Image (cartoon, rainbow, N blue to C red; front, top):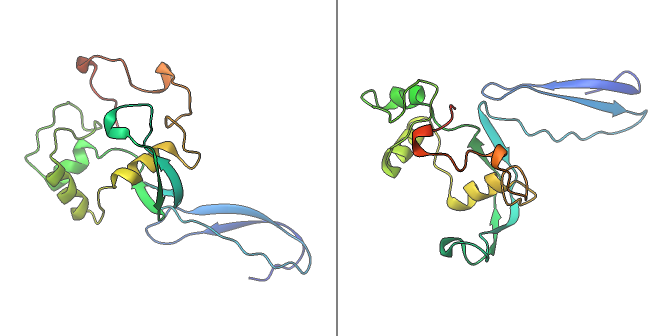
Amino acid sequence: MVFPEAGSYHLRFHRTGYEQDTSMVRIDLDQVLEVDVVMQVAGMAFIRGGAFQMGTDGSDYNEKPAHRVELSPFYIDRTEVSVTAYRQFRSGYRPSTTGEGMPAGRVSWEDSRNYCRSVGKRLPTEAEWERACKGVRSRTYSYGDLYDLKKGRTGLNLKDGPAGV
């Protein structure tokens, strides 16, 4: 791509099946610019690969010992699977919660795997799930390192039910 003069330009990237990306770049005269754009699959988040500390030494037995894990980049859905989406896979599905915008629940691992396959995806590994939750900074919680009752749905009764997708 040749730019007629130095200045700021908006670049728009689009590809079928991916979310559009718009970036602004500043070009100087005689400059070669290399742009690296990660296209987001619609409804999914791109998780960069790399090494991270999985588990912890100071918690439950099933989280020990903390150890280094190296992952390739991957995509993961931004939200849980909704009752509506799961019913397209399993028409007789009766959810444990009411409302079409609610997350599908009480689904076996096998049915979860089969649902993922039916939409051309797969379940994340335990390491991928933890990496996605911790983020690239390996935070303790998805929102940071300090526990905040207002930032998660914790401490509620079972009757309070899940939040909508």
